[in-house]
Length: 349
Image (cartoon, rainbow, N blue to C red; front, side):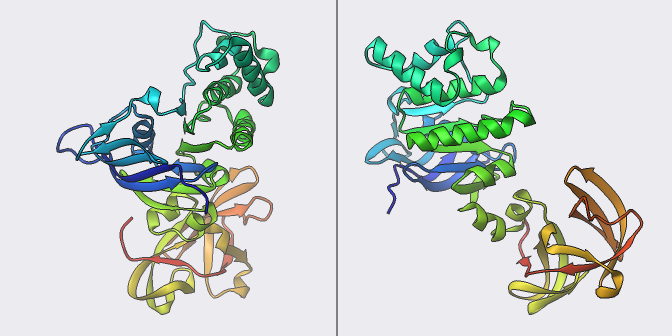
């Protein structure tokens, strides 16, 4: 079994007494060498969790351990190991580089040992990230992507036990973001360092994380491999947050349901009226003669390789993502077919 160096147990935090919890009853483990993505909407508590793990904030209840070391505990016999003694690296959203130091000096800043060995180690890290030729430059002369990689090199130079990344790619333009993601993940994998990456970008969360942890209103609502949380969401919020989802009501009898998309197969049995969530990739447009369900295309939004096509079925409208090459025309009547089963959700998101 893979070791779990970082253990979070029943974590609670609020900033105003008697106010709602910012983080409530959050528990998870981080395995050796694992990249875990922590995803959720703004204000859901994900950055607060990073700050609690790093030691920048004190927990109100729960426990944080690294192996056998207790880093934080409350409220009984409270423990709070200060940040500089936790050996946890943090890459901030704004990178927090020292403007008066060169790239090389920034990377060497947190290292210990003889200067020559520190310099060699720093240059090796910069070389891994394609930055060795920029070692003498000042941070303000670098692009956003280069600054982001320098910040990561500086964090890894101190040989942390865990790296925490707080939306490190959000300040990069689209052309740099994919390259930066690839470089960062490759370096973390090469170094064998466990990491938690906070993001509100569902594509980033699903593509980078070995596991994805979904936050909502301070609580951890689901954690698992990307394929699992996408295809088997525990509630409608997770289904909609992690991908385009069409939500509507059906009348169910066991695993069979009837609604605006016709007769559907449910993933689990339900009786009576229930909400279901359908992924757009399950919907296929066909000739009206080939389907019992037809709709009218009332809107199209071009998005490069795909289009968001709004179809009216009866009195309801539904946005459906379609391949731009085969998307139906505005005003066209289409037949609609659904493949696979759909997820019923009786509770509110």
